[in-house]
Length: 408
Image 1 (cartoon, rainbow, N blue to C red):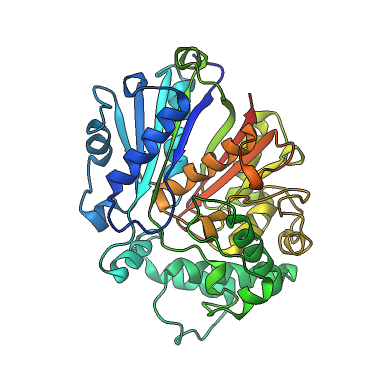
Image 2 (cartoon, rainbow, N blue to C red):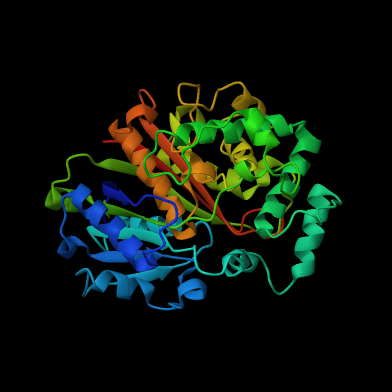
């Protein structure tokens, strides 16, 4: 069994709108970039994990998507596994590739995620999100949102993802419990839009002030459009390897994977942070890495909305409970601040192609640990953390991934 697992190469397309490219086109472009970065040929791959959540309903390829995409580029005669875990799909593909290498089942494994979400019918795209909670009991979702966020009158807001209502209800609950303000949530959004200006792979690259964010078209209170991740096309890929695989590839800039944890919920009281899935997954990751939140130099977290970053920075222990919003307003989570979060621009600005999002986080953090992030570089970054969540079930995410990376 391998005792260490390394990231040998990363690849990522520009996240945005790609009218002339399919899911498989985006996946293959990301894989080619990752292989080139690792100094590897396709024949070096021992196993592959292909993540996509929308390829079936939006493009009709509901099965064997990975086999078709990868065989067409010469990755063949190996195990190929297809992965779906809502917005944590890419991170789950990463975890499976990581554990495959760790168990000695492969010396070199590939994790890839891709989505083509812009199709001819936007309503069909938005309907995808209606399958990321318990569809057999929709009344339970309505009850949960009411319990979290109270009664609202948002009949005039128009068509939107149900997850904007979910995050809004969670935000209103947080505001009531911790005193978080809409201005503080807007500060997270403005910070991430500023970070994305210097990211050539980001969907949106326009700087915004807190005032700009607050003045934008409102969604379910307290959210406005710039606080929310856009519908995005894109692909990302990571080549992982053992010590033996690293010697075989001769990769020049490896990054070590110190921990990769996937967690799901259980029937328990989640009213305190210590019992929340995100905190439990983070604690397991810190324990496995032999580190704590105070050691983290830079983080990419799941900000499908700006409030998501507020909550996750608290659950990860990067700030104290109730301090996610104030810390952002004080500039602590900005590049150059105490603990930079989402230097890529986050999902709000970089974009959120569901199956690729978690691997896009790994791309950014690998660049940070290599010192190759350019004007987004976090000075002295030695330890990085990625948190990625997916779906919603009984008051929290259905699945959470926490990955900790360290320099070579």
